[in-house]
Amino acid sequence: MALRACVSAAATAAFVLAVAAAGMPSTAAASGHLLDVRVIDRARNVELPVIRHQGQLYVAGTPGTEYSVMLRSRAAGDLLAVLSVDGVNAVSGETARPDQTGYVLRPRQQAEIRGWRKDLQRTAAFHFTTLPDSYAARTGRPDDVGVIGVAVFRAATPPALAIAPRHPARAGASDSGETMARQRPDAASAGSASAAEAAAAPSAPLGTGHGRTEHSPVRHAQFERASSVPDEVVTIFYDSRANLVARGILPAPLPPVARAPQPFPGFVPDPPPR
Image 1: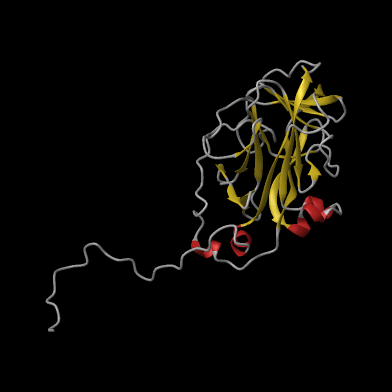
Image 2 (image 1 turned 120 degrees about the vertical axis):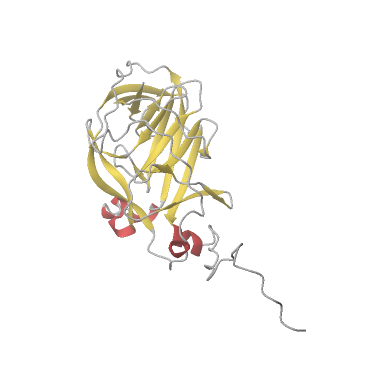
């Protein structure tokens, strides 16, 4: 199965990604009616837990860690997913708007978007980094760092171009930047980080860096939107765990116990006299 990416306009040219299909993890996601969106920690191959706070969705990232955005269509027809990272279109590099280029998914298809698209063959890996080192800040657009957004459009008509033939997934670190997940990541508990990590002092806000180049071949396709207005928008905010704790989005960790109670500490001594 292939993933396609599309350029803006009523009837739009698009890219087609050669990707392999696989099962999605069954854990909670930032789910819309049309599209599931998940953030995957690539270093540990686990899905970052989604934290719901006052009507908004958050994930906790670790500086220096590569991540990907997993998309899964829930729709019966083709969808266009316009991916924005830190207010920047992840395909074109433009300041993001819903009418721009995006990825086209077939019904029930899923795809892992691993980085900024450089050309028809390559992406630059997403990774959590400090705000000044983020791609958005380095290109003079720091105001919207810390958010991942997907504008979702239904298709008015089927795409004009055929999808790319399926290619086998390649093993190792040189895999395509947008391949399907080959394993089922285990959901990490929101409280799984160590108390020391969670209790750390607030740090500089996280952003998304422009990382190593990865092979990710695509070709053009066509997509006609049913409407110029997105059918839905899925938004996920992110920051370091320490910052989310400081902002009250994650609970503060319990203080460490000096000595845990022992179920079998020894023989029975006499009690002291009354």
